[in-house]
Image (cartoon, rainbow, N blue to C red; front, side, top):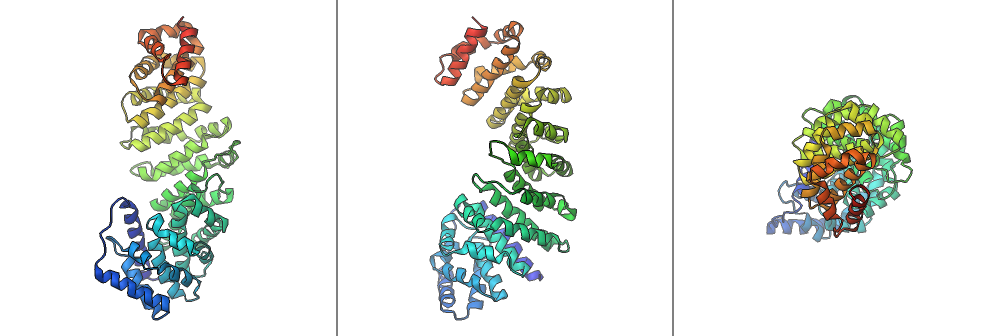
Length: 459
């Protein structure tokens, strides 16, 4: 692939990202001369006169970095003719047509709808098997935009075998000499597969596709490319989000050694690459939703070693992801977690009192899951460490229904184990008054639990 084509590819990616980033901003309208030029090009393409030059000129207009006139191109009704040209056997023309369409498809849902109605999906999927690397790569990019838009369009892509064909493109690219052009191809495949996995609805990602994604994270020089590693991570994060009742996909991924792979990837990128590691934290959280045995495997793989440093990240979203993952791990092996990291609960109590609301909420669930499932010995150490005063203060101050529910349930879990001694600690820190007031809360679940606690432990 020549350098000119690579430059066009890079520019296309930049334009698409900028359009996504500026989705809420109204673009400035193009000049009257640009509108006239688009109309003239549409006429040439529709009539079949000077098609090559017209398509290339249209592509040059669409790749403008600031306010590309996507809407005006859509309104010119040229999209149907461009979709028809995807059936062309002329490789040079195909490249230019795909260039135009991929820029249009980086626009809004409404701007892409005419393309979908014209039957672009099956044509793009057919081009995923094209012999030319650049044609294949641009087709991957365009399919990724379709799949990333909505579940309905992604369903059509999956129905026509899109996942299998993109996976085949990725395997082909991974056999090529490893250079920036090849990495970019694989990156596009990883990004497209992440969109397919994210918008798959209630379906599952086949395990062989999951295996391919793992190889993108870990194979040779690919493991050194942050863009590839990040998008492969999101693909696996969506793939490991197993909604089945038996968690069969999650358990299979864990038994296949995925947790250790994820931990090793995080160790490679833990310093200065928070954006790269974010999906891997999500993966560990997903893997921890399987069986207790799977959760133990995740802990044994060293997940806590790579997770806990990010509790002190400046990125609130990252702290929230870590707390969510810890809440899942705490369900399966709370005592071992507390024993191995005795300062963890203290750190979570600090977050519970002073952090963003969403992070505090997840930290509260970690503490509750530990208190609900840990041994009496572990709970005694937590009480000695001050868990009850903090939970009582938060319960008294919060207006958040979920936080109220969680704090109340945490105190109830502790009192179920040792009400004789610990109810006094609750009362000393104002817990009794708060719980009594909550027995008449407007939320039925909160009032019922509070009333139960008053009757059982404080009568």
